[in-house]
Length: 80
Image (cartoon, rainbow, N blue to C red; front, side, top):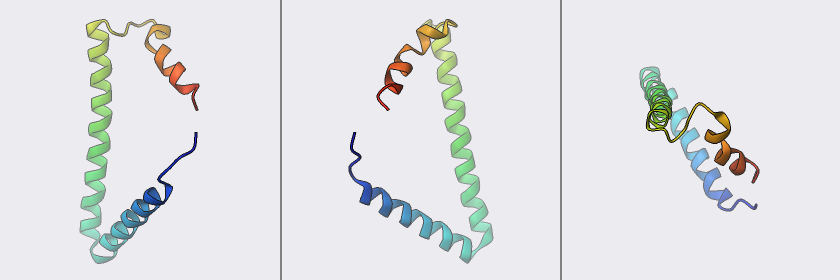
């Protein structure tokens, strides 16, 4: 597969890098706050993934039989 929009991704990454560098250069306290926000966002995403897994187990969508749970994941991974 060919990835399109590479220049847009590069521009966004450059913009984010410049903004984070500027925040760090202006005030270290603001830099710590930004880092805290990203840490809380990562923890929230992790908790959401764990809760979703437990909900699927409780609803019977996914059982403890791993081959049933991860069949779609294996098929998806073969595309890469």
